[in-house]
Image 1 (spheres, helix red, strand yellow):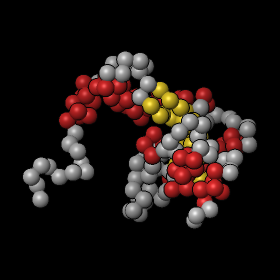
Image 2: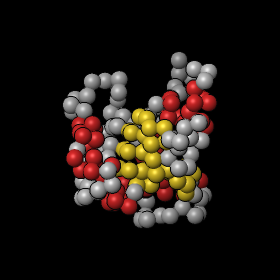
Image 3: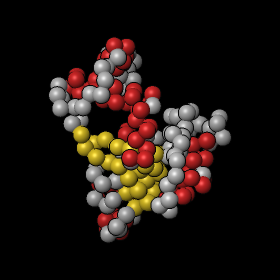
Image 4: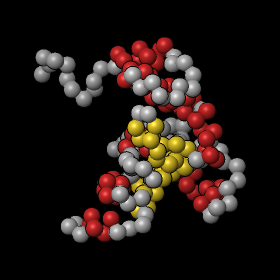
Length: 177
């Protein structure tokens, strides 16, 4: 274990799932190509830093918990077995369905680190999930006073009240035992 940081730092690229090794590589500046299934979103759990790539599974049943058995027979794995995805890896992309893994690249915007879909996967940003994610980030930018954030559309009123009224789920209410 004491040699591990040096070994990872000497790599040209770390190919890994969302694990501690992936985060260590990102911290050490080693580029990462990661695979994220339905239990984690690259937008939430890294790899943090510029120049990383993530293949993100986006099944309709996501998100899920790794600590519980999957009631959907692990459909998040299926896109990684598809002939279309294998052809895309080989540099022969064809039409990609929205349910196929997204290829995301780490980048920075006015709020900090974000992950941007490749041109081929940009269609995802026009889905309900992509629109909702962008609306939540726009609301956060407005709340923080970040004027340079690119707002694609007005923020829905119901989203504003939901986000700003949400209780902190990690701490008990003051005075509770």
